[in-house]
Image 1 (cartoon, rainbow, N blue to C red):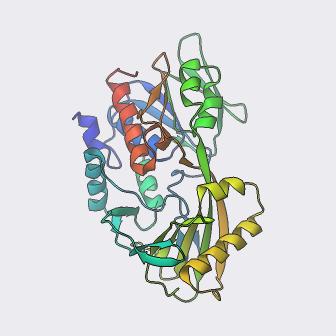
Image 2: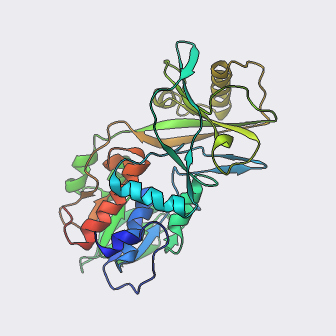
Image 3: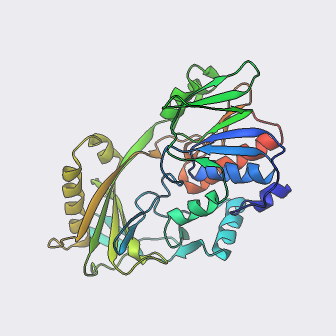
Length: 347
């Protein structure tokens, strides 16, 4: 293992950038993973993020007394490299295991979930992990990159949607969803043809909080029926959260796809009714309720390449969708791209 790989559990030791210049589009899990790895190796790295903060779907919404991890609900660790990273984050107090009781709703009734999956969450909120990973990085927030073009020198220049130019960079890594990445690379046939069949599914998320505890024996419930809902979680059962009984309900991918452009009030009503049915309490009235639409939530048919490089080896596509989906896949995708770039073997 190279020295820079040892130092990507969070903030890395500062070095004077002496390596290649790299632009990373998107400050989600894969982009942050790549950036930390590259910076520790001495590269000059700059990230561009369209939102006001880092994290992507590692997101948390906060209200008075309540927090909602309304994107990624938890993550698992299977690959030895990622297991090691998670152990380091736990030692640093930024990640904890979530020991909530998990159930399954199927054929109109609740039962215990089988298996012994270890589930991890950011502490005190899911977004804490990506905030931690972004510490010290050069990130331009509220900057949407709309196009890239190659200069006569062979370097890459980025253009945002206000017309401002950014560059020059020797390499560009994009962690955008596949259809957005496809628009960015344009007629670059080396990449466009390889990602054209990857489809991201949407997800509607409902956030609700109650002034009293919802009396159900589970903190997370997978919904096995053909339902509008696929998952619900008592967010307040996760380590470090507040005392207000708060829940996140995720709609199924198919239902979200069919109702992608529906009014938020309709989405809220349908998902709240489904939640009441699952927990068996029709009279529940939340003291807070809101919905959020994730247009690109989950890859229906993810690739398993880790990172995709164009024919020049200077543009790379990373993300959960390039590496089997899941948070772990996103992190390892960014790490793999950085390793290949530093070792000079993009392919």
